[in-house]
Image 1: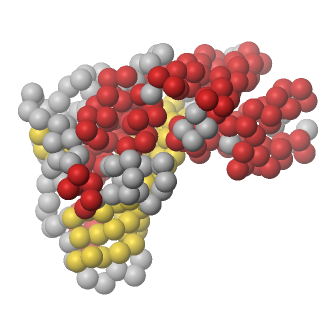
Image 2: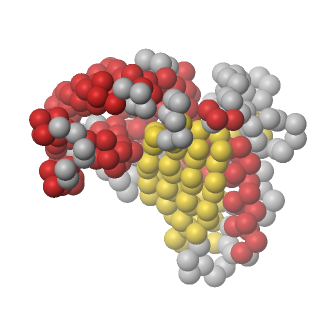
Length: 305
């Protein structure tokens, strides 16, 4: 994977780097904040968008129509100082499906453990095997996770290299850093078993090999043929859900199950709302096991014709 040279430090700049992988849109929401200069957040927005859009994170040459769309909502809930903040990061990533205008969601996640410092004209910088500053590291972690999910959607375990880089980011976090900046350690997150640590651990765990196969089948073998062979695509998706159901049995607290449901529930309901009765029933049965909290949502498709 390409880095900016061979250095361990990737420094944000807007020089002659051609955007390849992402089309990112960033919104900074700052209700009730009083200390910081409002212009700081406009600078932050532009800086984060450029971090995604103007750095090259891979060796791959993404065509414009292949780029991953990312929407980021950074909700800043607390000013510790006029340059130190706490908040939440809502991030959604989609990739286009083959021969259609439809984009499927790869990740839809809310990270509630966002603590960072940001000063006027700050340079965002990412350190692959160290720690620069928390905002850059959090964004870099999600960049690699999204690239991994995109890779897995096109090739079985095609995201391995990127997931390992996300794990490298975790491994570089010291105890002192994790005490100051939550979300990096197994404990100490506001979201039990839902931190960045567990996201990386889950995706690389041998316990979820069925999930990785199912994720590839769902996207490459099903969604990418949906436009010309809908019934085959639906059958493949049902088989993929059956494999994910096995993960739910063997690893019931796996964060990936929640990630899958957050990303795919609405898409799946749309796909199976007009399915035959037997296929509807199987879909409801499987998703009620994978995502039991939302079982009523899946059962609601019984009312559709």
